[in-house]
Length: 215
Ligand SMILES: Nc1ncnc2c1ncn2[C@@H]1O[C@H](COP(=O)(O)OP(=O)(O)OP(=O)(O)O)[C@@H](O)[C@H]1O
Ligand SMILES: [Mg+2]
Image (cartoon, rainbow, N blue to C red; front, side, top):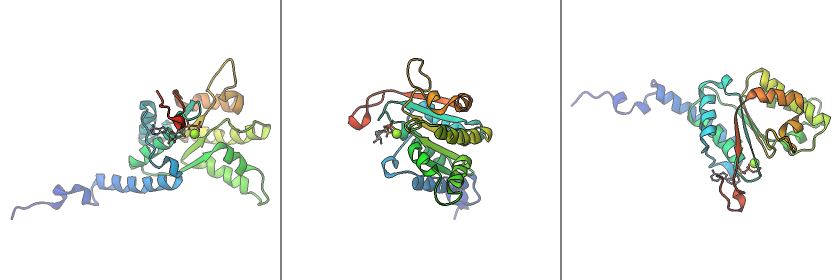
């Protein structure tokens, strides 16, 4: 009988193999991603080259990834790309994978001072510190001094600690003639975002919910 090393035949079965470990980490990370992802986006895949590029950089150098900002009109596929980016990172088999995905209107709702002492503060810490944060639909809530303060504390922490963040918004990053994201978040956050956002993707196209396709 020929002397065949089983590891040569099926390296994927060998727990000593690097690829085996990477795949085990990917399985774990993808299952975390699935738990954090609502059913609508379970099949989400990053398809835009800029989004794929950001996810790949986040996988190789977490602290250098900065923020991915997806802007555009309703139904252009921002949330889809955002979940897709996180899935791509998970599937790459990162050393560590933790994420929270939150709609910004829900976030402000959850952070309102509650009866439970310290619950809102605890929630803000959780969102500030998590390895990956998806902040979906920033700019839809009504602004107030309070929303600005919450956004400032969240973004300032993530900025200081170089934590990868994905933001989607219906507002353009900048618009001289109309409301933009800077107006919503306030000057201090806008300045930090200007440095944090390494990839800005203005999405165009018709509303996919009405049968349109992004260009
Ligand atoms: N590349 C894609 N392939 C297949 N389906 C997609 C793709 N992009 C988006 N969709 C689907 O189109 C619909 C709208 O996409 P999505 O919710 O991501 O839009 P959005 O830009 O986040 O809109 P809104 O600003 O209203 O939140 C969803 O049902 C989504 O699953
Ligand atoms: Mg969306």
